[in-house]
Length: 124
Image (cartoon, rainbow, N blue to C red):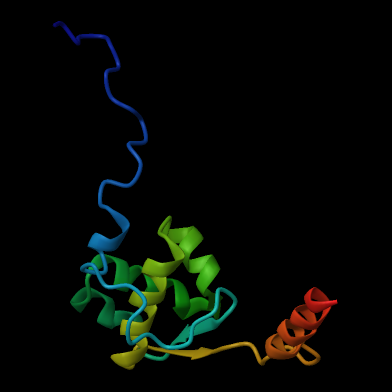
C-alpha cells in the first residue's frame, strides 16, 4: 500500500489512554464526597506541578487561577467524571487542593417519606 499523499490517520485520534488508566483502575472507593458542582482550588504553588503526573499537574495548574467545579475539570481534560473525582481526591489527600461541596438543598423531599406515600397509594 502506498500512503504517500493519503491522509491515513485522523487529525484527532481521541483519547489514547483509557480513562481509568490515569487512575490506575481506581474508582469510587475512599473518595471525598465530591459532586459535579463541588468547587476545588489549589493551595500549593504551581511550581510543584513538575513533580506530579501529567493529569494531576494539569488539574493543579487549572485550579491556580480560580476555583473550578469537578464538571469543568472533567470537560477541560476530556475525562470521565468518575476518573476526575479520583484524581481530585488524590490531590486533596496530598494537600494540593481544597474543596467546597454545595450545601444540601433546603426543602429537598425525604426519600423515605416519598416511598412510604407511594407504597400507601399502591395499596389503595
